[in-house]
Length: 406
Image 1 (cartoon, rainbow, N blue to C red):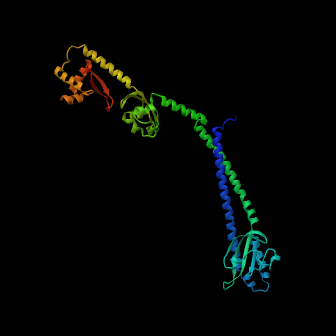
Image 2 (cartoon, rainbow, N blue to C red):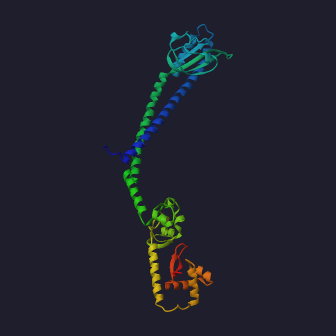
């Protein structure tokens, strides 16, 4: 089984094909333009010659002679040879020739329809006459009163036009070949540059790398956010999107400062190799960054996010347990607490499934600080359970729940 074409050969072949097609199309267009320009140039020349012949006094005076061809034929031949044309034919209003490259044709009627120039108009076109198919111009000959008395017809054979056009094609084909060769060499250079940019990897290798990267990044429990030099997110895996409460697709291309928040943006900008605790929503994250400063100019950086929420809860519970043990070792109420107020706080807490110090303080008309002291005492003695509220901005707040079964 034949091996698949390499990326280098694919790129080279595709670019060479494009160069060939563009060069071919340009050559065809240039050839058509050149042929049209050649015909227009001959038309202008033939029309000028024909009108000059029609206005020559020697030609006009000869129409009154007994043998007009005797004066007109020599003049017509001189003009024909000087103008490098196939023929210069002068005829009267009945179509009888007074000049022709073949003298034997003089006195015969013209072989093509002379009605257009005899009607006073100029004819330009291709017709087949005694010399063959030719590109010709016919103009009327007028006397001093403006009456049409004959026609002047000049032309060049189509075969001669084709030969001249073919000769002119040599430089055009040479230019096309040179352009094609330069295009192929340019395509080879572009292919080489592209190959170096992608570390000379083949398409299947690139696809495998992308697939492995996607699988690895989105399978990590650690959040990964990559930001380019302009401050836009270029990559965010599923874990990072979950921590930020966003959809991974929405993060791609977003401005990092708008979605990461102030603390994470600071870590990303300043760099934090050891890691910095940051509270994002209900998550306690440890954020690390590769730094994003380079000669006072921002460059790309990567932010790594590790979830420490469960560990933080465990630490808080251990601290609470230690506090409970310390309070239980003490006898009676701590200094500054009254049994009556403690009873009121305990009763109010039992009436609420979950409350903060500020909420109970407002219910009992006591300060938040006093309510917190009583709630901490209840938590320390096992009459209440304390938990952290991560929904608040900045430092998490504490909430209490009564352990009384009632």
